[in-house]
Length: 201
Image 1 (spheres, rainbow, N blue to C red):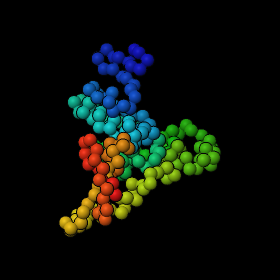
Image 2 (cartoon, rainbow, N blue to C red):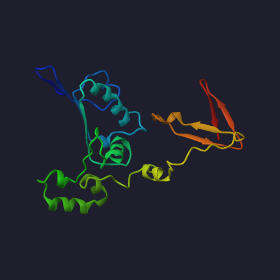
Image 3 (cartoon, rainbow, N blue to C red):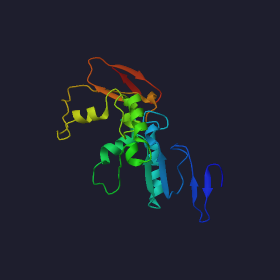
Image 4 (cartoon, one colour):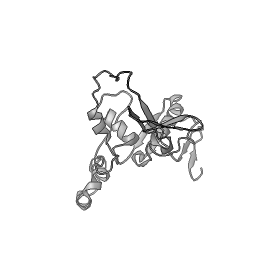
């Protein structure tokens, strides 16, 4: 046994690792627990939660191991929120999402103490005590607003070929899916880089 591992006689090791999508690769996993995954950095960071998720999936496939995420809700972005949005209340054979308040999961907590905590900070209490996601922490446009504006049943319509299209990608953001702007501008300024041509509108 070490400070971060317990080695069993059957060869199985119970270990604690940081949520780096680079260091968790190349292992065979019987199970994996993502603790407080809503607090991990999202896809806009250098250590995105979704990349760690993608990294452990191959390691679990060989054993048919289970991936468990346990977390307080937080922002309406990231891996936890995506799983909740897509799977909560759905008959999904692969994913079960359970949501509840502190009192529902831990009946030993005094109700009067919970009431006092909620009254002291009702905004934070939504996630800390009531099992929800906070509305005061969001990106410029929340996912649910974008989803509501999309007409999924409408076929793709492209403008005539007489229009000129320009795309700008902000690759310096460090995101796994960098932001991109597509426009049909009246003027185009082209900047050549060593590897590609960038278009600024």
